[in-house]
Image 1: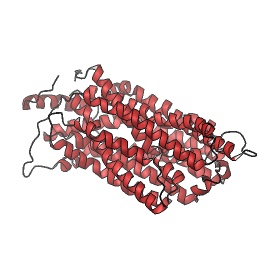
Image 2: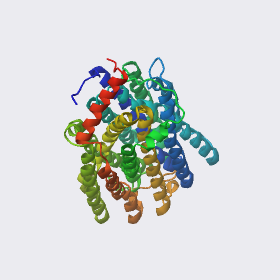
Image 3: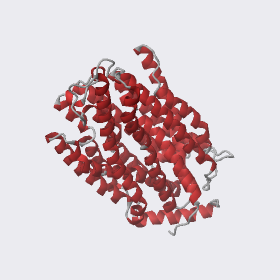
Image 4: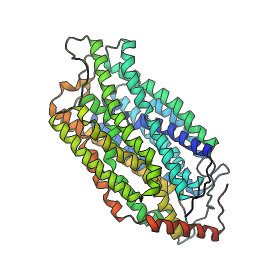
Length: 496
């Protein structure tokens, strides 16, 4: 099928810059909230475990529900676009409140954290599902849709690195400015500064996309007819889509690389001058500089591996079948994770691990891009078979997978704290701040496993469903051609 370009460059950039802003805000939550709750607010691990697991699972369930709401009607401003504006301000306010530390007793503080966290997830869903459904209505061309998703996911990844840069810069600079001897109060200030900066910049980038994006693929709203399959039924009966969802669920461990990195930086490695003989203020500055530096090393690996893969994905996706790309890169990531784990077991030397961590991050970039493109292909297949195209509900399946994966990842982190007996109040308090080297070696390695063998096994498992995925090669081309003919016969015109 020959490629037809519908999306002007300016509009493609507008979508991708909006994705970058969204990436900043989501990373501020997903990469740091477990560290903030456990080590800064020092909430009970069992409470954090239940909150992370139950709230994120509920949030994941909300994605398909939101998809059905979005698919139900088209407004005069579009089907997807209005939600960008509706959700922007509430997301910003809740993100700042999430990292605000009110002076409350532990019971009231847990209630406050729970309310803000649950509300944040629900409002974010209201923005996330329609936004990532936009490529499906911006163009009718599968290659252009894939390219738009790839570019958007790449800039989304760039945006997610902004909080990481802030974490490094603040960690290196702020203790010296404040003369901080109280590690707990310093961390509260650091996270609040990060949240405010991220929200202001992120929302400006995200919300401007509303004014520069056009919805072209407008499938007429259809009233439900008695006896016809429901929206959810159509989704569950679409075997290729179920395989993509299964792939995503099995790859949940990949979220550990970013979600657990700050915990690994805090509890597995210390890089810096010997701490003996330092004053309290010097000790806080040295340990926080180490945490920031180690976290940045992991982020640099992600940037080179994950974002590097995302940059070359448009070229790879034109040349190779999506499923082959997934299988090859995920197996490579698994092998790299084995080497990372062995090096950690025998040496706990972070620098030797770097090349293998980098390679294991490549599949993260591949899956971040290719899963959205594969869902678009599955929606083409479903529309060809049923005559219906549930864009938002289909894309919500990816949101469901992402949030379920994050729920499993953050829950796994908390479980590790409980399993190895980590006590945050002894590591980070107003009286003392401890370094990772003060822990037993088995505790340090256990934390390191969260970013080594755990993601590796997950990557190996997620490749299995791809052996049964059939929308590739000539079959994919057949679906695209037949769908174009079907749309023409139904009188569906694609806007300019």
